[in-house]
Image (cartoon, rainbow, N blue to C red; front, side):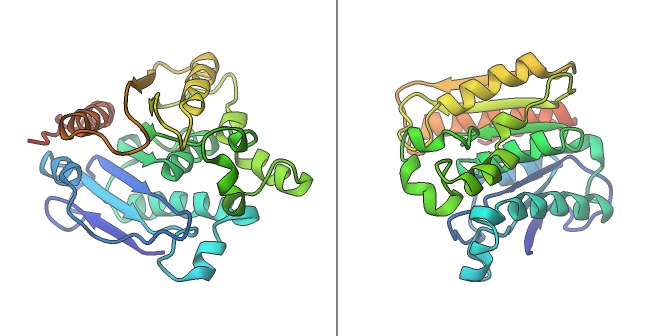
Length: 252
């Protein structure tokens, strides 16, 4: 598993607020590119890390297949291992680890949140898939059966239930701070996923951290005006920064 790590000094000098993200799906390849939100986080004093997880395409099709279908849990295990490595190397400390993911990456951080709720201080889950038992019933869900499997197959249903974040929400658990972001015009990942998850977490959590829903009107899965894109990134970064003790990043 490869990982890109960016920090103010380029080395683990002192434990800093860490923002870890990833995707790990559909054979998509992680590649370095300019991202204003990454620079904003690092300029504020934080560490940013992007992990290349099984399910992606960084190591070819076998790498993709090793994190899809019945093997999807490997993606989540890789993400957890990435966090463990960064902590062991001294980049951050447990109370200052934030995670963020979008779309399939939203599923990733939803699984991280529900499988190891005490591991992360803050989670931003954007345009996510979270109810993996019913994902086929909305949006482009039917087209993703080759990637995730189908609840209509008993064996695949067991796999989906094992990691489905919505079904793993456990009452009486102290969940970290969570911001779920969705758009009412999203025809790929229906906002019902974020809405249901928010309600389930608010009902279940025993901790003091907030569980919030950001619902954007009049936009879809990804494309939006520059002003709306900046507002989304700024609010997500500010939410995470507040929880891990980082000065609010400035995108402009």
